[in-house]
Length: 245
Ligand SMILES: O=C(O)c1cc(=O)[nH]c(=O)n1[C@@H]1O[C@H](COP(=O)(O)O)[C@@H](O)[C@H]1O
Image 1 (cartoon, rainbow, N blue to C red):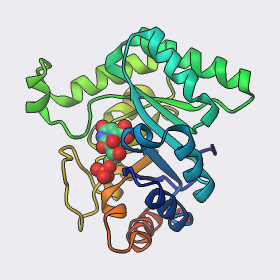
Image 2 (image 1 turned 90 degrees about the horizontal axis):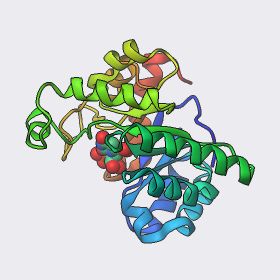
Image 3 (image 1 turned 90 degrees about the vertical axis):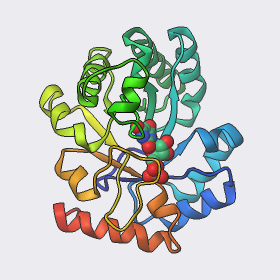
Image 4 (image 1 turned 60 degrees about the horizontal axis):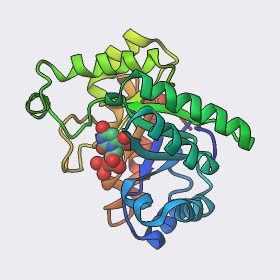
């Protein structure tokens, strides 16, 4: 469903209300480069709901299902969503290199069989809701950026197209993995928005300057009294930064 555009802004539609998601996708059509549908929406509405949102907005789709299981199961799950032909799809890097490689092979084989474009396959590194203390509590000591770099290198070795990371790690990953590796950053907060449950945050401008290719933003837009105006405000700031018009 669509290819990434020059507009780096993807809006996260985290809701179980299909009417709200379709209205937002239609309303934000000219303001964002794509929409992200994740676990909350997919668990309730599945393929049918995703297709409805796509029809409403016609924007590239980031299907954020964060698969994390044994290689065979993840390969099967990737195969099962391939009819939706997402522009972006993710798995957890913590699932390991063999799991990521299985996801990549499955996406390519099934996309070819269906005659659709394969997704850009991404690996989630360390969720942006975790800081060093949270990570240490899971048994991973040391700076968060070290773990993000390890997982991103693993994703690269598995042949994935990029990673999901915070903007704080983007410069390091750009230096480690080169200009073509896709860096997708959630945890993006304009100065006028609250951080919510995000801990490793950056402003849209900072994320772009740090080398992010795609900025995922949800609540600062979807929770605003006027989502179109909120998205415009962010985009206008980015246009001023990088002449994206
Ligand atoms: O994979 C993701 O998209 C993701 C990874 C991550 O590390 N952090 C993160 O926030 N996300 C997603 O990005 C979106 C951020 O939404 P807001 O916090 O509302 O801007 C949510 O849909 C999260 O599920």
